[in-house]
Image (cartoon, rainbow, N blue to C red; front, top):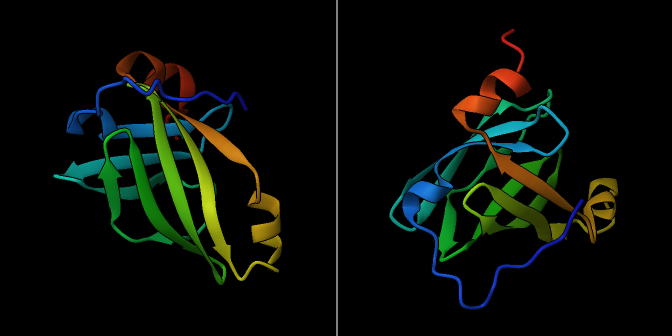
Length: 127
């Protein structure tokens, strides 16, 4: 995955920038993000068979944090908007740290790309 950082002088993202469908680059794993003030909510669109739960996320400018639980693992996840249509997601903490999932996500990140009308038809099969 490509790593990038947000310029220090960047203005905080508007609420609407967070909203929409986001897909992990080069996969069909897709989430829908909605916002209300400084909170964001995630619902699966194409979760690739993974069953997970999230808390309500907190937005702080171009960054957000959310708690994710999956198969006995609890992770604090950070989302960093890079542009209006891309975000880097990484685990800030993962417990229990000896769990194989925590081992696999340590020092890893994923690039999410915001889907637009033009790439809905190209990226997502209509099944």
